[in-house]
Image 1 (cartoon, helix red, strand yellow):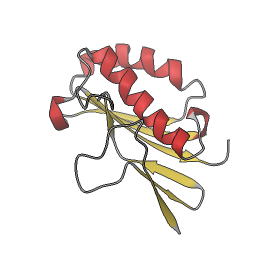
Image 2: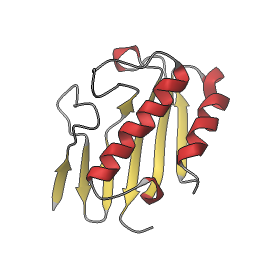
Image 3: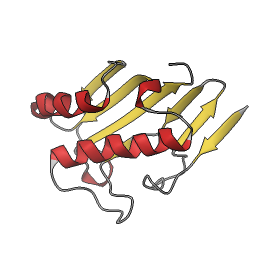
Image 4: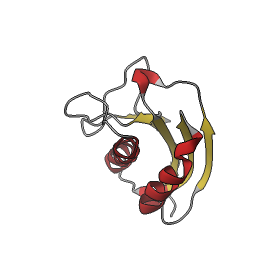
Amino acid sequence: MKKIINTNDAPAAIGPYSQAIITQDFLFTSGQLGIDPSTGELEGSFDAQVRRAIENAGAILKAAGLSYENVVKTTCFLTDMKNFAAFNSIYAEYFKHNPARSCVEVSALPKGALVEIELIASREK
């Protein structure tokens, strides 16, 4: 059985999808942008967008009764790999347990975002 997870502490979906789905012991989030959920606007700088995207994903984890420590895989999209070192520095503040990860450069993201992050989390730690 699957369950849809939604929280007002992360931006609402901007299309026909859910913020996250839990199925069996796994949570799958949709990609999170650096959008402030209280304003609906993108944060200004790359660093601020990274932090906000990770915090938005964290709010979804929390709504599902999970935390960053439950994350087993992340997929990260950057519009410029020149930001890779800055991304890694911020990412490491949140994901101290080093989940598996893919990080790729893309030509564009929704709303002109500079970064997007999606997670897979397990109820097991």
